[in-house]
Image 1 (cartoon, rainbow, N blue to C red):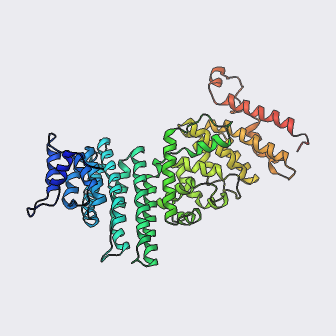
Image 2 (cartoon, rainbow, N blue to C red; image 1 turned 90 degrees about the vertical axis):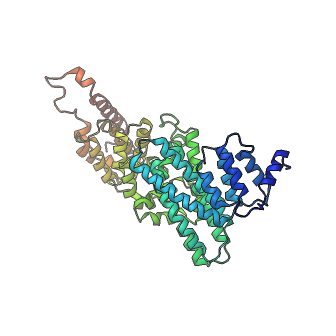
Image 3 (spheres, rainbow, N blue to C red; image 1 turned 120 degrees about the vertical axis):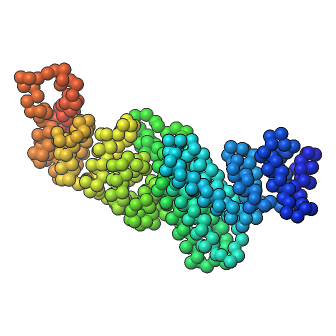
Amino acid sequence: MALEPRLVELAAKLGPSTTPDEDPVLNIVTAALDDQQAKWNLEDINAVVLSSEDIQLNALDLCPCLWQHVLENEGATRLLNTISIKASSKECIITLQEIQETLSTNLSLWAQDDQEDEEAGHRLVEKLSFLLQLYSNIIPRMVLRKKGPLETLGQLIKGISTALRLGSAAANKGHGRKLLESLSEFIVGANRWVKASSSASDNEKNDCIDLLATLLLNSLATCGSYIQANIAELYLENHFPRRYLHSSVDSESLQGQEVASLMIESAKELKLRPKSLLKLASQGGGIALACIVLIAHWPIEEDTPELQQLSQLGPQIEFLLQSSSLVDECMFLLMSRANTQGELEVDTLASAVAALASSSPNPVQRNTAFVTLSLLVKKIPPPARLAFFSELLSNENPFPQMRVAAVGLVKESVLEALASPEKNILASNALFGQLGRFLLRPDPLDLFGGRFDPKEFLTSSEPPRLIECLGFYYTLLQRDTSNK
């Protein structure tokens, strides 16, 4: 496309300088930054640079100059992006590493002193996302000389990992997602650059893949909570339409799903698969959290682990539920695998899900947790299930609402046992031997004694519990036609 006349003049000005040590591009960029009335603005300069292959771009000077105005000045942002595409890759990497160190220092200082200034933290995270985009432009153009790809990437990734760890603390949901999007672009580009390297051995390439995989997992460990795709609610809505409260899957959730898809594509690029992620999760810590995020969002039809295999993650999932972290992913994993092969230890997950179903301040999350619990208890062997019901029904349970809801869980299990021809402790005299004191008595035992206060009674959790108990007893009398 031909340039308009005034830009043709600018192109001539930006051409090679006849004066030693003079940089015409830097001079005109500086003038555009300092003077709003300058003859040419940064958008003009960017248009000319994009259209020409002859303009010499000194990234060592231009990048720091433009970085001071990045994101606040759209022209500076676009021109810096163009420079990362067209200038010397070596010069770009050198100056961006210096910018990265300064950015990490600023993020560290924000964490120490200015956490109340959330906007300042958000601006730093936005800059970090943009920095990753610039790296993604440069890496595919890098030419290896003395250093191999492992040494080259190792230096970059060490700094990026530190910056991402610091940036995750300053991010909100939108910025956290943007960080992950930029990271995905960086990882995919870097991995393809490594694969295309003719000078690297297979071992060195594999070491580079491991390095990028560690970056991905460490970043997901700190930023994975920003995905918030509501996949558990979506699963509940699709598979148990009568049991979900209302749809919480909105445009924000769909954006989270898109980010998760990018993470999965990055993992596939690095030869990660659900089975290998299960092995990595055994390391515990942040790596396990990242693996849980990836396994949960991995397309369920692609050889994903069954419940028996997920039992390896029991301690990590229990910890996450107790700390209300990655609840969406944990609930989805448990619900979607509840009908697969395997059993659970009652004290690893069911208790944690029961506590979440009782104590979460979010009613949708409480409902999802209860549906998950109703599916999990069916995987618990009947004797252990009976003991678990005893814990839920006991007046020592700190959550009165769970004592009410647990009666429904007992009813589901008993009716299922009655319908089965196989012998089951839940369809025997042992049921009331262990649970009768909770199901067939008021609490306290002298509830209807001389000091009975109707108003106090009606405002307590006992009326709904008694209604559930009577409903269960009535249903049992109707269904247990064999007097099991």
